[in-house]
Length: 380
Ligand SMILES: *Cc1c(COP(=O)(O)O)cnc(C)c1O
Image (tube, rainbow, N blue to C red; front, side, top):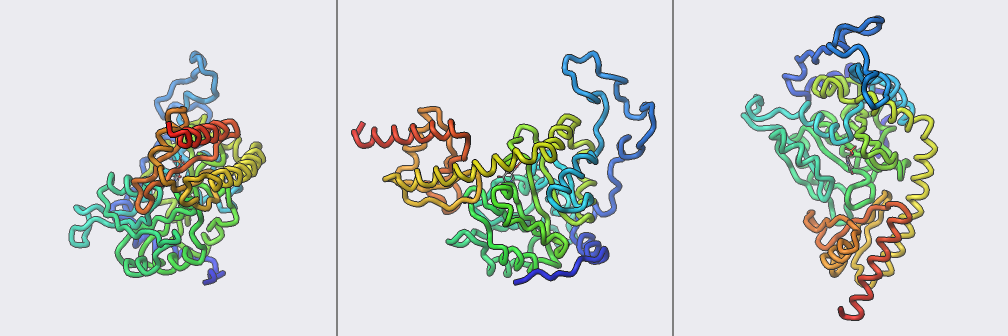
């Protein structure tokens, strides 16, 4: 299927978003913080801040002031990086907050729902990232589960059968924890299926490792497309807590009513803006070396006597299935090497996921595995 090349009109996106958003949110005026209400001026006595923070032992500028709701420099930097307009970007505390705010913005809970007292639903496609379900439960939204097919792709029949049953479809591509991308044609089919009934959220947390698979070029064709991004993975800034939601400006506007009034602190904004401009080349180098290490670890895993299956990965982690996954996992823990046991996920019995860390970390991983192998041979 080929995306239509027309660009959306404002009316088209307005109508859809107004129909999908929670009624309370549609009519809501966002909290008018001092920063949102007034800008400019030279003497700021409108937000109950301290006049300065020179007496603190940390030496950072402007910590006494509330941040802008959405710091312009940061929004412009991400919009430039992603190739979208500024009004198509919402900065969040990690992509996780994007997930949470989407559900709170679009899913009516039972008590509020004119639709026979049922909560709205999200669709998830496991095995996949766990936070979609957690955030849904936290908001009392229903969860429709449509497992990925055997080749780890979308169940298009299941999606078709549920095309009028959900407000949000979450698609993770590349998928965590399996590691491969969802076919672009299937994502387009899903956008078409739900174009009058639900948002289709494509979680691109790992897209820097395979940027050619991004759906960002579809944004101007599909008013129901939402893309989640983060600085936690390829940008190496998980501790910063900074992510982005990319969507039509109408969707961003609705989410902006629900998100906290100051989600991005001044230091976060300064560090993230730097990472997205002056340090962008560093991210690229990190991606290149990670992708090389990925191949190296893939070959290492392929040579293991206990390997049942290695999943193909376009990310900074590799999922693999082993005869004796529990034993391997425990042996690594004994060496202080922590990997993730995914065995409790749907269809992922005896599956372990290793992150592509630094060369030094991966040496420790390989040593621990080799050690496990020789202990097996010697029967100890
Ligand atoms: C890590 C991850 C996130 C969350 O990222 P943060 O920006 O750190 O909140 C979201 N989605 C997927 C698939 C992830 O793996």
